[in-house]
Length: 195
Image (cartoon, rainbow, N blue to C red; front, side, top):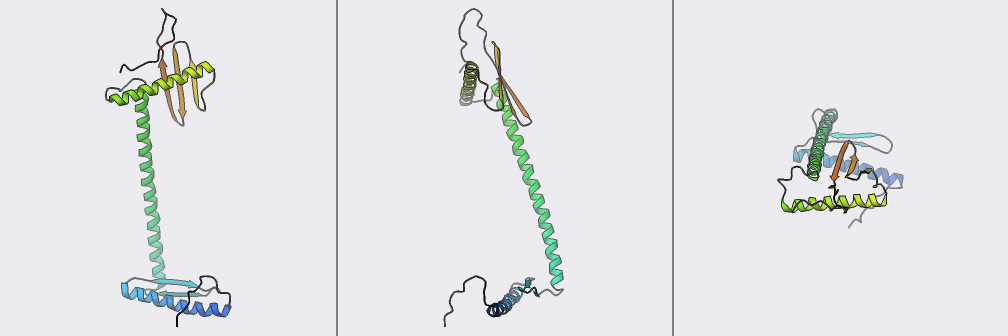
């Protein structure tokens, strides 16, 4: 005789539900006992019926109470370990942000023309393009008479343009000096790094 597949949903008939509960409870406790014997494991099973009655099984010599105490002790240790893991995560995150700040500061110095000796030709060209783009954007904003978007402010005089960008607690100030052309009345050329 072949049994059909049981549908996993609540059994509506109360008598059938009680019979199934008793049979499956017995099967569950039997499997717990077998697991303890075969694998030399400490096993505890707590089960509450729908009427609120408690059924329990423990293969521990000291009973279910010692298993529950052991469980609580291990759980507290895991919470401590998770707190330790969280602390390690935040330490790594702080180091990542420190490195990012260092990189931004180094980039800022390079934009100001400092610490350029260690850069490759390709990096110098990229820096030149970045400066030319920034200068172009400043000139466009100056011609249009519109302030730059969001948290950037542009101040200008006839001889100097500067950008101040604020990002949280970090403040970066970039200044681009334009050459004076006193003898001739020409538009100043965009600066180059002499590549």
